[in-house]
Length: 69
Image (cartoon, rainbow, N blue to C red):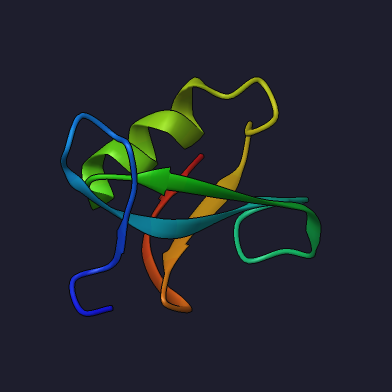
């Protein structure tokens, strides 16, 4: 479906993001988590707020959208 996944997210189209917990920036992936978010900014915010992510990268469609360090 073009434009990402649609979910019951306040009627807003959402996209699937992957949050990878890393050992260090550019390091080995320790844990992967998929989340739905309405925007890149929201996905980065959710990663930043996670206790799991002292160092994480956020991907959409396999492409990096940002990181939390």
